[in-house]
Length: 198
Ligand SMILES: C[S@@+](CC[C@H](N)C(=O)[O-])C[C@H]1O[C@@H](n2cnc3c(N)ncnc32)[C@H](O)[C@@H]1O
Image 1 (cartoon, rainbow, N blue to C red):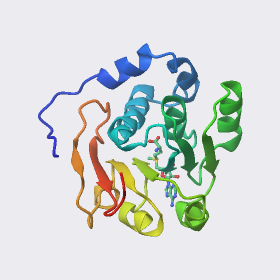
Image 2 (cartoon, helix red, strand yellow):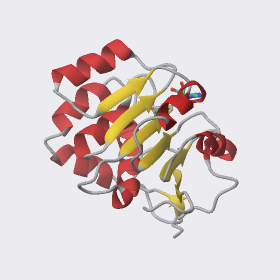
Image 3 (spheres, rainbow, N blue to C red):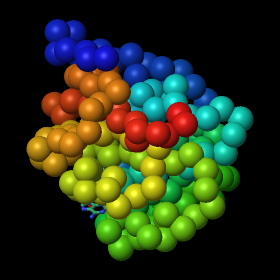
Image 4 (cartoon, protein in one colour):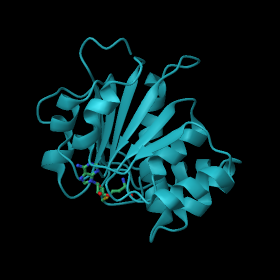
């Protein structure tokens, strides 16, 4: 499926997020951003696009590559899905994210303050279950990261390095421009690993 840039920007994601009780817990993390609405809608785009593939009622894991200092996409998934989440970023602020997790009693959020290259083997050695990957404006080479990980489906949102942040070697299940993302970097793809049961 391909969506185009024809639609004007929409506040739909933000409105949906702000109407939910989980917004209270999300806000302290996103309030630290220079542009909270931009960050929230980018992370929520990942959830909205992967949610139809997440295995309801069955355990699954989501690895959030390049999740920044505040692990915001992992945090959002941990509040709004049943998945186990692992944020990976060498700049992750462990003290801040740990304090946030403890304050709101958040379960299902873990992290590695590391490059994805350094923890890929460790992640692949975790107990088998469906594995999803998000790349929300992650400054990594998506195809190379996926080549190293055990994964079933992935979501990517590109910003300044689309040649790296969008797949060049895989056929996306879905791609386009997400008008609900309130930033210039709105081009996304959903890719599914051939043979994955999702
Ligand atoms: C533009 S920031 C995006 C942060 C966050 N996803 C967001 O949208 O706010 C790009 C992030 O990619 C991270 N990054 C760069 N190389 C990485 C790598 N090899 N493994 C994991 N993260 C990486 C950077 O540390 C940075 O936090």
